[in-house]
Length: 138
Image (cartoon, rainbow, N blue to C red; front, side, top):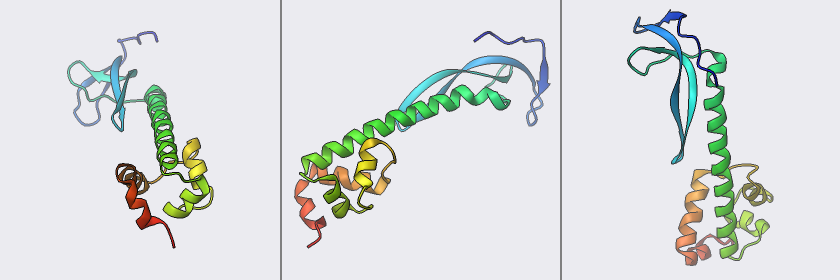
């Protein structure tokens, strides 16, 4: 990405500092993962408070989408690993943990993300498999 011209200026709407067009590193974080991308914007000579135009945030948005996709893949693999460890089919896991007849198929493909509550329950049953008896409908 080419460095923008530093001749144009504008004023920060809150701090009233003079801003110049620049590209600075910006770190996007999502659930413990991080990615640093070059972020174009209007920045003060000193300080970090920038102002961004519509297309400026595209790289940050793309990085966030990438981190979310990585999270979905690792979550999907974890759900599948725990379900298999418990000896449950996807359909049976859906009955035991709720969510509908195809929910575990969708969780394991990464099509949808399971709720935080379900993830916590799966982690608990992963550590203490005997608790599954408490969840199985009679």
